[in-house]
Length: 437
Image (tube, rainbow, N blue to C red; front, side, top):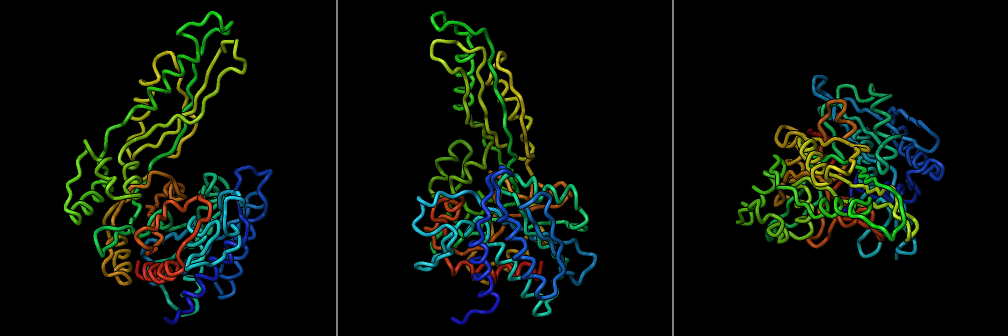
């Protein structure tokens, strides 16, 4: 099949970006200039076709670039189209292909960022150039944002821009980015393409138990370590109830109707197992969660420490933060202090509307047997930051993949890869979405 310039550029730009080592360690002392180099590369490609850009670099090495293409309807809300340019660290010894080599083998493109998310950065860069080259004017303003620091919470990327350069996003009402858009098996011959319409909130709690330090030969049940251990065990064993958020309800309705299944709250986890890897994602999005992840206590075996501490990672459903925190405090017990360290609040966007219709129409133009299905992402993206501007965020990076290809499993993994044909599909569908949205 003859490839279009749009498709060729999309693949080429994804490979170019993968070859730029933009690892985000989360530590300013160890981060190089990879994000800035990637942003400058994007900027040069946009400006080559006359697209005006704004480059920002709040601290050395943390570069982002934003560009706006004007639409034909000045009254329509602008759409933010965003991708992050940073990637998580790699251990090259775990890879069979060089993590920054962008090698293609057996139809797969390998490299850090192939799925998370230099694939979309390269695709939307190619689409922006395609529109400029072809004189295509979308219906609404498109704000292309290529961002630093998403992998460490967006402090120097989306969050900084929202706080310091909100005028770059003036008039925006919706945003599109990760995590969604990839196909999963629905029934024989048909695929569901997941659309993230909501995201769980993410936070951390510090649990602290206190007592008197003393000799380990005189232990008491009220010592800090037993107190803390009991609290951690109760929290770790607790299962929060299923909550049918609008996104979950729609997912269960669409998938259940297609497969002839009625999902129940009581046995939902087991019923979702039949969906394979995607079932585990939906199960995680069906309830609040609280997971003990770090334990700290004494440093000598014959000394009872005066305090013991645990960190609990929590993921809250939209509207579920207060219930989650109340329940964790109850499980921890009256003698254990609970401190909320940090949080990114959950977000939720409408699961119906013209933008959803435009996504569905673009998708089915390339896969008539595909169906777009809303779901709730049990993690976070930069959409949370844009939500502070009143922007509704969606996750949809279109990828048609083989039924046994687990896109979720590629995130942060060794030998991260994506089918080359999926990138061509992504370019075609993305261009259709952005033209009509």
